[in-house]
Length: 426
Ligand code: FAD
Image (cartoon, rainbow, N blue to C red; front, top):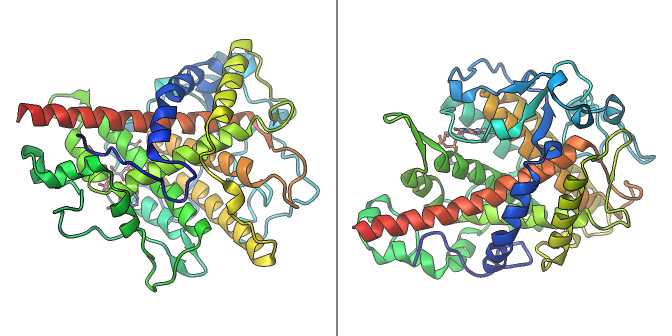
């Protein structure tokens, strides 16, 4: 018996929760070793871009918000971003941005506004020295950013919002904080799986009652899963301000995640999406290609990455991207463009996060998920030719974003155990 052990099919994915848990028991370790190699631990990022949407001046003054950066001269030459690689190699079908996207240095087939890697403002960060954790960033600034992100989830004027929480916890499997002290059957109910509950929550969510199409549901799941994963890390690496100690905070996890099973489902959803994208890195004969000027020199990192890709390919199919944007018509193509544009906007909203550490991880994860989307959706279609070429930073972001989500699932296991221990103590 335990909390947050969902069972059954993950909605809009091609596999079930149990499969993901089995895969992660091995895959997490692979990702964890890979992300510690020098190639994957250095990330170049611009943390000083101005927020283009509003005046963001509530900079987080907490020490926990600061990012330790590296002097470029301390980053081994082979891991530096080569100037050459930052030149966008446009495909013949790329369309120049117009309108609100006019300042974009990327092509219309990108899912993210990529930082200009040759910019003087970019800094090198050793990700291992800057773990994603509780920083204390909260309040109007953080809320505004999340609100704007969810507003991007509005296609054709129809907004997809988080389902309302049932008011009664009895029999629903929802966790009620007061139940922490009891052995209430409602709390235990989660152990039996909440697939039914979740599907009942995934009813049409906009103000009308029309069914949302797969693409729009997927968009929502991606951002809600990312949000939930960040919350899990906050709760797992939490600072007790009274004792000054960092430790997992079960109550934080219960309030932010366990009481909202659909959020947890969306973390699993992000996992299957990223895993599928990693498997697609191995599609071409030379796996994938990095842009001119970028290469992985470290043979051990290359071997580990190959192993990771092979493992991902050996997994049962976790997500079937062919179901999305599948119509051979103009509407389908337009929907894909819209999907990309909304995701690109989210990557820009990251420049409005008023805490450097949160901004770093927010940018990296959106960049990583954007790379996954590019791998899944930019092939075999008219507007992209041949295989997908990645910049070094895209590959680094993809692997680290996958690691974040995989670590979240690990943290959920830990919270399940903590809950059991608390119950055993009574
Ligand atoms: P929030 O997490 O701010 O949520 C706001 C509202 O969104 C909730 O009230 C709820 O209605 C809805 N919501 C919450 N979760 C979901 C979900 N999964 N799906 C759908 N709807 C949801 N803080 C840190 O301490 N460390 C970090 O590394 C960090 N990184 C951040 C990165 C980004 C990009 C942003 C925008 C914020 C980050 N924060 C970080 C702040 C953190 O995410 C919260 O905003 C903060 O802890 C305040 O939490 P809250 O309880 O007010 O709710």
